[in-house]
Image (cartoon, rainbow, N blue to C red; front, side, top):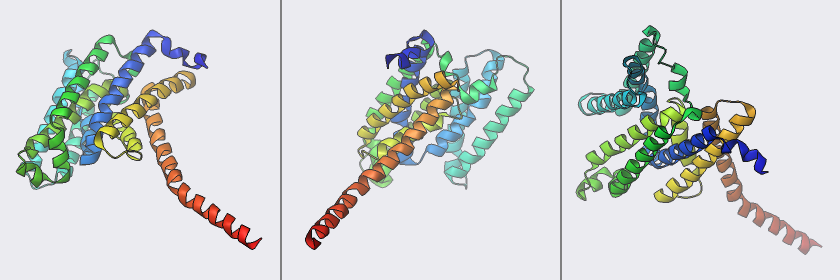
Length: 290
């Protein structure tokens, strides 16, 4: 039994495990609010919008995370400006920036001859290549997210249910919405290196959906989603080791499968009382007939 977990004892798998768990907790906290507020499309668009910044950072020799942060910030500011001043809805603005940033990134990569730009790594990540510095950055990002989430919790809750009530209570709903965008930005920027920009949305959504079938309070959803995400990291790393699959993608698939399994189990549990009553009634009828 313990031999099955032996691959996790190697140094690079240990770093991948710690880094992946940090990503899972980050995505669980931010993903809870993203799902509740309907901001998943923004997270997905931002994950794709990292490409031009990361590509330019690779060309000029800057750390990829700096380029990712700049690109995500430009996108979030642009979406916010177009939503406030333009005639289009927020979804339309996000869609325009999403396609534009992705196309710009592809153009930059296609015209660059720099070996520092690895499109596959940007899109799908390389969790097995996580370093100790990456783990430190993820830990700092998690600490910042926890502080912001605790500080703005009441405002986020009020904003979710009624923006006018939040304004009446002096909770600054506009600033709270900006802080939610900041949380999504931090989660996407710091997580893409582990699971890639195309897959980070899976960890933002799947564990939260799986948790929401069983608990309803927001802190409980965050906690259970963190556990689900960490289990997906462990199972994904082991499956990728034995089946020789891409680690980041396997982790996301495991989290999605857990979400599907959670839904099926919950439906089975809900139907159990009625079926039990039906069996009991049929037993009573048969006893009466006999």
